[in-house]
Amino acid sequence: KRVVVFISGGGSNMLALAKATAEPDFPAEIVAVIADKADAGGLAKAEALGIPTRAFLRKDYDSKDAHEAAILAELDRLSPDIICLAGYMRLLSATFIQRHEGRILNIHPSLLPLFPGLHTHQRAIDAGMKVAGCTVHFVTEGMDEGPILAQAVVPVVPGDTSDSLAARVLTVEHRTYPMALRLMAEGKIRMEGGRAVSKSLG
Ligand code: GRF
Image (cartoon, rainbow, N blue to C red; front, side, top):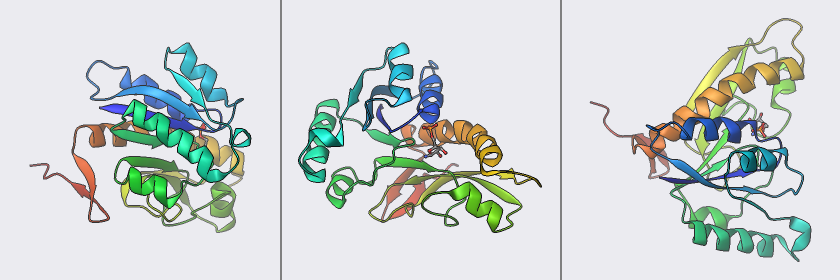
């Protein structure tokens, strides 16, 4: 299966996916990394691994639609089976999602449906949560609300700051995203009728 990964920043999740998919028995390969920032740290990491990269900068386009159209045209050339958003900080339009419905995954640093949106770790701490974690979900038109493929839980410990909790959650993100991608690439989970459907595992 052909995978395209979208990043905006450091790309630690992209790196985890790149390492996992490099294993000979992994049923997917990353064919390109796309960024919406020229200085996304993940671009250099992908290039160091020999993964083709493309940057599409919003300022180079007259509108959000033109920016997306350029990315969609590139995706038509790359023909991905799966698109992984990994620290991609831009909302996709309904047009984009409809074009690739059921093929787009995202990793969100909270246990959805709790704490959609930003500043998830501080919000979990402020709410007095004793656990936090990450969610891999299908991307649908609403933000952070698509069907869930996988989640992982970490403890919130007294004295945690958003940074210490973020670091703890990242460690399980880097395990959970590759695991979810493998399930998707093996056809063991797919989106059907707006829900994540697991193939009968028996
Ligand atoms: C991570 O917390 C991830 O869950 C969120 O963006 C943060 C940075 O991700 N989507 P990365 O290091 O750029 O992969």
